[in-house]
Every structure is written in C-alpha cells, then in structure tokens.
Image: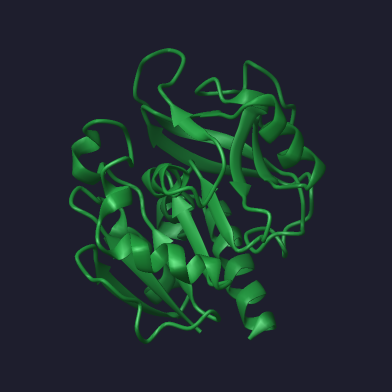
Length: 235
C-alpha cells in the first residue's frame, strides 16, 4: 500500500502532505507531477491524494482548470476502478469539478479568505477517513480557504444524507452543529463528504496541519491513521 500526492501548478500543501504520510505515518509516498498521464505503479489498493493550494492561481473557478490537467484522466479512471482518492481543500474542489464528488465549493458567505482552527464532528464510521474514529468525535483542525462553502441541490443533499455520505460537519468545541460554528456558510455545515462507492473523499479542513506534537495539535493524525488502517485492512 502506498500513497501518491498530485502536484499541480499552485499546490502549496503537497510537501506537508508527503511529510505527514512519509515521516509521521511511516507510509510509502510518491510525488506525481500533474503533467503525468498515467498512474502506472499504483493499484486500487493504493491511495491518491489531491492536496491543498491554489491550482492554476484559482483562475476561472477554484479547481476548474486543474480538473483538465493531464493526470486527471488517470485519476478519474483510477477512482472508477475502485482506487482510493482523497482531496483536501483545493483537492476537494478539483474532485467536485471533475465529477468524482457531487456538489460544488462556492465563495465563503463573508466573501473573505478564512484561516483559523475550527472544529469538526465525525458523522459516521462507514468511511475510510473515520473508520477508527467514533461518530460524534470532535476534532480541532485548521481551515484555510476563500471558496469553501459546500453547495448541492436538494436532491443531492437528500442522497448524501440517506446514504450517509456526509463524513464531517462543522461544529463548536462542545460538538454543537450551528450557524455560529459554520465558518463559510456550507449547507448543513458540511465539511467533508464521500462518493456513493465510498472510495473518493473530499474535505475542506487541513488534517496535515494538525498531525504533529510540534504543532501543538495531533487531531488531524487520527484521520490519516484511520485512512491507513482502513486501506491496510482491505489489502
């Protein structure tokens, strides 16, 4: 089992992600440049990560240009075969633009870039990112985005709820899900979701920035530990 981290023009969390996966978690991790056209060497037992950043300068629409990078055809084909794919922040936006996840990430309601620690409440254990985390667990994880407001139509929201595809919701330190705890105006306080096949995941918060004692916060490491354990159990 190994991880591949896609590097787009404007990615700025790829090194952080590789450090956490490789040095902190002790996993095999490979950097993949966006101009590559295949994922040769990766099997569906592996996991591809789309990291945070500002791919292509966020021109046109966040993730809209990166979705057409050469590597994305291979990522889409990999996901459709059952390969594991995770998008963090800008990676989440790219996955939505590519049609691998439903909905869209729109401008924050306050029309400002928000960078701060927030709280997440896990919604289900039936997910690679939370299999080892009890539902209702509150995690403190940073966000850093200007376009993090999750939006989907009513039919999509119903499907997400009915099929338990909502993985994380924004909450306060006590676990209360409210408008006051919503940092960007996301519908239903949604912070992270998965596809129906439960092999493609997206979340706006940055767990890689909360995975080491030196940073004063290791809540994010629980997400990576759950991901690694989940994949290993299915190898």
